[in-house]
Length: 241
Image (cartoon, rainbow, N blue to C red; front, side, top):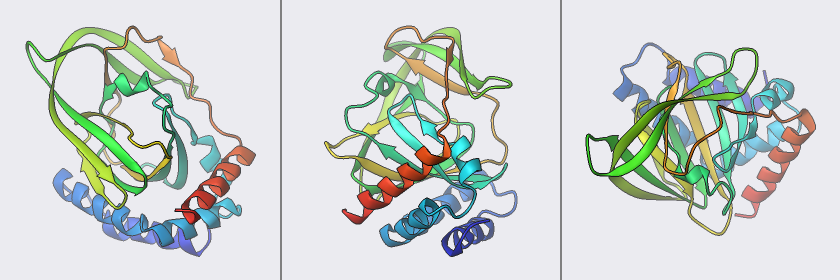
């Protein structure tokens, strides 16, 4: 499944993240993987290889899309239920409404900023005071790729941390950690994102202060030509960095 770079990435994922690791060990291992695979030269070689049509472009295109929060998700390595390695391309100024959404994930994650800069805020629930928001349960629709958003009522959140991640930085978050992130520069930001699939939750929590959300948000996958074109454009962007 893929050329030399993709096979090497799969081997590193398998060797580093094998077994039923406790979450803190899984986060540390995942962070080490993105630190290694996200080195500019190695990531560029992997993306250029995949842009040439190596690997599974049809399968990866089907799981790649333009996210409502303002970035493009390009699947690089699909290891079924275990791990998914993606390149995220963040566009400055896109997704201003999405920036208001505070959310968590279905499984622990790790990421490295390869180019640009990412801003992030962490939040925790609280009984009173803090930020007023509407809470939704987000899940995936059966038989389609749509996000389903079920309103569950008002909530209050406390801002606990503000951070900026420059190129070369890595971070890892447990699945339940509430956060929001956005591109913090006038130039595109590129991150390498590793989603660990073991024990995935059935839904995520989404909090918004930006007004009501629709009940369903379409997730439109890329076709193969668009996917390969985006990978090629991403490779050119990394070469110019």
